[in-house]
Length: 271
Image (tube, rainbow, N blue to C red):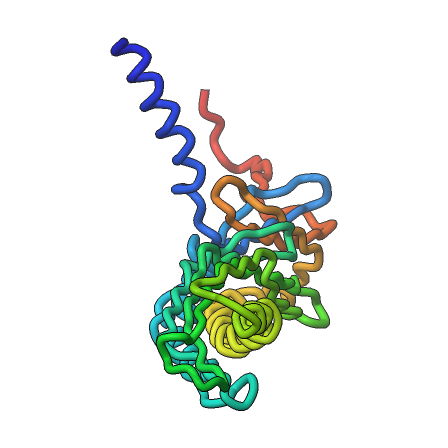
């Protein structure tokens, strides 16, 4: 029994280790090739958590303020129609995580988001009859990391696109025609406005943080191109989720070596 328990614990630890090891970072390495000979790659920049750090600064650490901005926006009087105003809103956004899909593509996922709200209605009944709904949704952001070239030597982010791949609406005390109306309101208008507001409030700060943190590796990359580091390759080191960009300098010249000893007949011969 003890053996089984120990094996189960070990299996659980091993299952967690790859995720704990993920870093979502960046490394710049340079390689000098002399003909067919190459020196070992030399890391000239490493930030093992660069991309996740940008995401934390641009979104995760700002979630409370972001939730308030979205509630204030969606809760504006008659936002959806005359007499239809959301109130008693409870909005909770999840933790965002970064991962590479390929050398130059990535995604940001925010799962387990939740919103609850009641809605006023243009009816003669009091607030006790106001319907309510719950909206559970996930967020996915995809983007592209442009790799450096001689003509464009900077790493940069472009093409961020935000989706709500999973969105589930559940009625809470919805009755009659007005209940059907509010449920449809959540499935369509609330979903669209919520998506647009997250898109507006999130993408700008995250892009700004990524651009700021990429400035340092870009300062490392620029001089390498001036030294004829012409070949650029990239790969993802899993499970660390570390993007390694290797810049290779190739020359036909032999590398400098030790001085060549010449025979001097005037020197005594040691026997």
